[in-house]
Amino acid sequence: TYEKAWLAAAMVLIVGFIATITYGAVGPGIAMIDDEAGSIDPDNINDHERFGDPGVEHVGGNEYEVNVVAQAWLYTPDQIEVPENSEVTFYVTSRDVTHSFSVVGTNVNTMVIPGQVSEMTVQFDEPGEYGILCNEYCGEGHHTMEGLLTVV
Ligand code: CUA
Image (cartoon, rainbow, N blue to C red; front, side, top):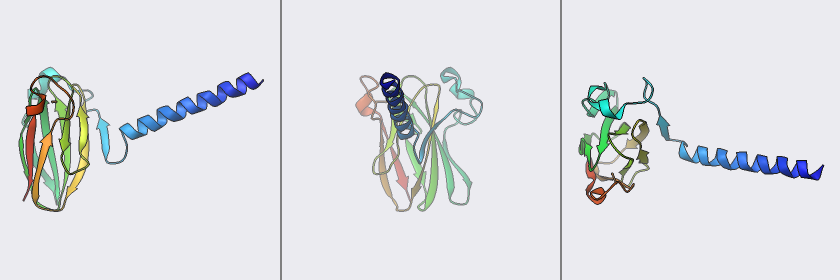
């Protein structure tokens, strides 16, 4: 019947919308991943191998990993330094509420959700200073939540 055909067409559209939204959220270059050990426990971040001692790690060649913990209302570390022409993968998690981690002037702009690890990779070719800020309202100190990434 026509009703069934229309119903099927509507279902296809709905699935299509959901697929589009999902792709947009986890699209190229920016991926939300669970930690290797599954979800991360926001109350035990200090014992975590990646986030217990957050900061910059040189992992070989021009590749760096930067582990960052967000909490109201600061990033640890809040000063990040990497050399020019480096490929930097950020791993960011939250100790408390939902924040964001955004590096001004790059495509790094991700939500940071307690219990999850946000991962994104970006190439820094030019020396310069890049502001880091939180784009997700997280309480009265939200506007003071910032850091600085320096490419030397
Ligand atoms: Cu953290 Cu807004």
